[in-house]
Image (cartoon, rainbow, N blue to C red; front, top):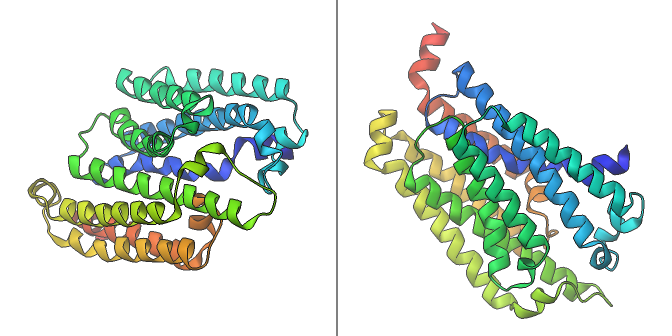
Length: 297
């Protein structure tokens, strides 16, 4: 059971919280019907992403055995056989299909595209420079689009653009961490595509995507449609949390040299956790001020 749970990568379900962004910013967070539909979409993507991780671990089992950390993964270490892993992936896909069947066509198409892209990544595209980074980033993009489609709301173009930059920022930082691991681990060469990258270029990519993320989010908060929908310009103040988050993450990966797992960084760094919580609470208070005021009275 321990090996199976490890194979499912439950902590990585945190990434699927991106599905709730359209729910929050469409002003439907406190509407029960919308919330449970979004929650169902979250569960679908969570099971689907676990199936993707299992398939990827099967495809990477030989390479993972040479990795100083990934060698402990259930399939690479032999705690779960390849056949058992394949059976688990099939079960997860069947459960995903059952849960997704009542949901709308656009959401189903988005989830299917997510699975197919990751399948192509596991069996080939991970070896193509830059394409590998964009495939990783597309997973976050599809989560946000899926979150909008599942509750049938329009998502702001600025929010999509901001998500793109966040996704690329996290994907590039992951490659940077992998490169440092290769450099600092004797006898470990890492995946072939890492030899195509240069640390200086990676740092430039991180700078570009970080700047794009900050600018696109700031522009989203002051966009005419945003101000009209929320009836306030105060969302601009949440940009402080976004900037702190960017600076903190850059500090962690470039100065502290943390590992190559963005999810682990976001879940274990105290200031980052407090910052994300502060951003979320501030956004909810600003967006739902009138609703909260009514509830309190």
